[in-house]
Amino acid sequence: MISLTDEQRDAIVKACTWYYDTKYKKKNYFIISGYAGTGKSTIVNILIKVLGLADYNVLFAAFTGKAALILRIKGCQANTIHKSFYNISYNDKGMYYFYLKKSLPSMVKLIVIDEFSMINDKMIADILSFNIPVIFLGDIGQLPPVIGSNSMLKDTKNIDAQLTKVLRQNDTSGILHYATAARNGEELKIGSYKNCRVLHLKDVEDITKYDIILCWKNSTRKFFNQAVRNALHITSPYPVKGERIIGLKNNYFHQIEYENIPIFPVNGLPSTVVENYKKTKDSHNILLQYRPDFIKDPKGPFFKTLCHTDYFDIYNTNIEKDVFISSELQEDDIVHLDYGYALSVHRSQGSEYKRGLLLDEYVGNTETRNKFLYTGITRFMQGVDIVINYRR
Image 1 (spheres, rainbow, N blue to C red):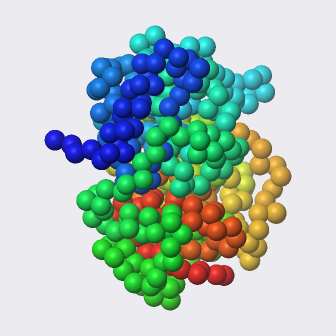
Image 2 (cartoon, helix red, strand yellow):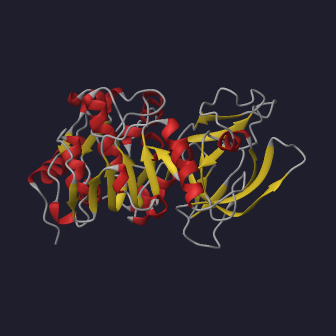
Image 3 (tube, rainbow, N blue to C red):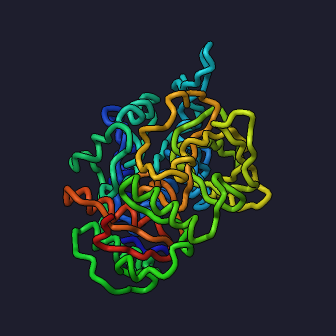
């Protein structure tokens, strides 16, 4: 028997009232914002049962394939926003583009969008254009979209139900303890709590043991990508079997499917190389085979694509900036990849990792710093080491 908090119970009552209100067409969306560990997924599952909707009546979607897969693990038949609401086509020059679907299946009576903070106003307007009631699940504590803005979450007046009570019984790792402290702007003091630590960089024992290293700056990301490769004694100029890589640019020319979810080699997609790179006739390209990290099946599908070498060549020089990268890299079928041992917190949104290292290096606006730390900490499930006051 699930015991609901007053906030959760209130959110369910409000959402039911909204859904059955004949005036909902004037506001055909309902926003539930909740911090990590407050039980957003729990109340949505209960709400669907209370509304008397069958699984096929509800369309679950998330911005990234990884986020959609997480929803599926929780029992929701989710897909990506692009797969759910758009079709893809190509013009006479071979350039791809998305266009909005004309309609959705008539059986869909409710749309649920997870990771609402990641999508921008244009995409929100497209989703609402189908005139089907939409529940947006978001977290005002997280960083805003990389491209565009989400004006709905900027103004708290738009939020219909706010979940703030963190369910401490869920915090077996200590993640929620530090996430809550970061969100509230509290000082993170040297020490440890459960499976998490706050420490200085000099006290980090082994940077190769982490699933991911998260940071703010691109230069820091590159520095630690190289540092991890050095620590692993990898001397190859390009990725070899077992190395981690990350997408730098959306590419929709290549597609694989897993659990009926279409996956593209897009910006921020973490993957692992399954075979050593192969040279091609073009010195600017290599052939890489790599499997998205959220596909745990060792026999699962993987990408086999041409990739630009220029991003990897940076690590073979003393140049830290991207300014010298060839302006000829315009072929849309060639994928843009980089090493994925370290990643910006922005690119990590929508992903989950077991354990990692978070570098507290943001200097500037206090609110943004709090969101940076909070978003970074909540990417982890089992534990995190937080390096405070990191500077390079």
